[in-house]
Length: 328
Length: 260
Image (cartoon, rainbow over all chains, first blue to last red):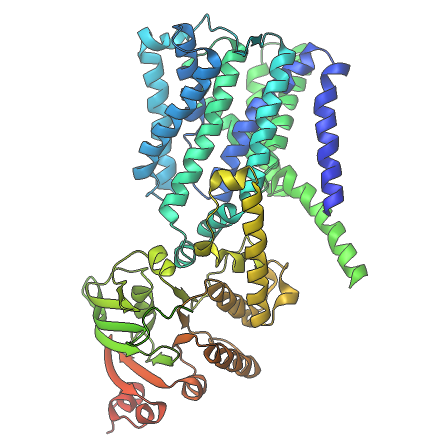
């Protein structure tokens, strides 16, 4: 893709996001809000898993911890939501640093097992510490987010805030992955001996990506909880992990925007599925839902191993090759 | 090129040993390298040459012995710290970064000479953009050195073996190393590619670079090296000029077996 085409595409996406609320109703705005929040976590998880090659399954945990810390601080009146979100992010940064330092010495499946353990432990911990977290029933009475006197109340407010966060993360990671930091990350995931022989402190860079992506998930978690005004341990457990993985596979994690595309497709497909399936099979919706996405993942893995984003890139790649042939 | 230590050898290896369990891959190897020289290490398969280069470059921790680069101790410190001290190397199996383009691979070589952090890069601050441009220009210069500028944007998977080897060299050159270690640079190359490589190594030497080569290809080693170190079963069995080594009884025995 040449530069002018790429900026044109981004310009169109920006305009679409800005104007969508003007032409659609609250239903679309609500779903798109979720797309932005899950897009932000999926994009950061994509960088961690697919670009840095760190098979961490604890990403929902950072999302949940960010949500809980800011929610608890807000409910108890210790810190306003905006400050609580920042404290939550700092808390997640510290805990992912402390946990990551020993855990990231593990490779491949071992890292996946250890982080999966973390995911389960935190979920159980949140539901057992009833006096602090509200236990299984969750935490209620969470106030809305307000910054400098402006209170975010409607779906529309959160829509713009969530998309600002999502595109902000995407922009940051886009810049980072094109810089020396991004090259170092891709380098150690391709060949660790070569990367360290080039002067890259691999252990430190692994920890950097781990903490950075955890903080992004934490911010998304805080936003999510102030949008829903409610939080529950079950939201941040295994089902969310499956959901994010589905987004990564369908969207394609090798590109930055793939997971966001995945979030868009998965959430809208589910909405449409429930809309039409609810009419035909009102009592089977949840089951058919899992079967549908299970089959979709298999189909994508067979026919589009790079996900939707990989497929889109291939089309543009072919175009570029055609130009090169004419030019050369 | 730093001239902080004008005299004294550039690289000193003293009694270096590396064991893997009961296998003594490298045993008490000692030798030195003068600044601006080309020294090669030869030896039969399994003699411990690659292990030796991996120990010196910090990928393996030595069991005993010392390594000094320009008088500074580098024995047993991690590879990324050794690289920062000025040791650049290539790999026998290239170990290129497959998800990066040719130019980006070479730009990774500039890692130790750049400073921008996660946030400077993520927010695309002007200082990060300036540094990026500098790294790009320097990497292009290194690609010019190995005559691969026309390949700058191609993905690594599209390159033939000879060019992969050259990308490895360019990547190490981008580190602006004080010592360049080449691990089997001529392995698997066609004759004309070997000639090209010889010319490249001479060109680098004429710029004052010190080069250490581990190699199987005898014509390559004998035409380039000022001194040759011979390793057999982890031990240094001979050292000298190419002619001395060629006529050394121990060396002939190691390569051809004993006379009957």
